[in-house]
Amino acid sequence: MMPTYTALMHIDAYVRKYLYASVYSRIRTSSHLRARAFTPLEVPSVKGTAAKDDLLLTGITLTALVVVIVVLSLFTLLTVMNLFGLLRKNTFKVQARQFVSTMQMAASAAAESERRYEVIIDLTEQCYTLRQITSPDLSQVLEEEIIVTNDFGANCQVFYVLFDDLMETDEDHQVAKFRAGHAGWQYGGKIVLLDEREQPYSVVVSRMSRVVTLKRGDVEFMLPKAKDEVLF
Image (cartoon, rainbow, N blue to C red):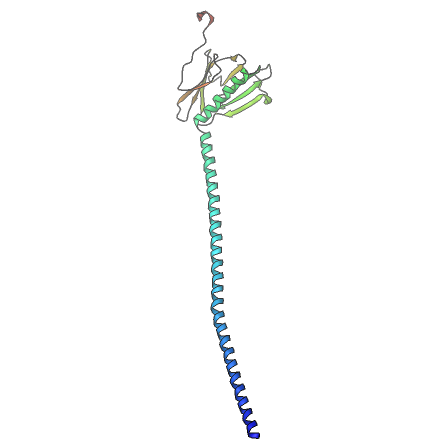
């Protein structure tokens, strides 16, 4: 009885040892496989995140650079446009046309109303003023009468003024005045301008027409005829 029991105990111990060894081996193998499976998956994941961050930062940097370039381009364009506009304003043709427009404004405004207007040309100061005459004293220019005042500029200068009654500006008479009423200009004449190359241009004012014209050269204009010279 004792030997049989002892043998069974030995067999039971052997079976337990075998089972423990088998289970332990499986556990180690499973843990090792999980460790090997975990390690390669984690490392690439970290590296992929870093790469994505680098790409994101690169995209933001390029976008900011493009925005800066666009803003600088706009500022450059605005500067060039302003400079071009300033240069255009200083050309002879622009200044001469502004003066012609002022003369035409006086004639048109007088024709459409009962008011009188006057363009004063100052050869000494190289400037001109358009005013509405509201006072019987024509020698006095009130501040509230002034509509336009402007300079001729360095590229456009008044050389002389000749009226159709042959009165001409000289050293003693450096101010010329053209008055316009409902019936037209009180006096006609021409205002001779010089461009930057000192080439003459004539602004022609006629009593017979309210249209003020700009012509190349120091042109001749028709003088008004006396009554005994008119055939009809």
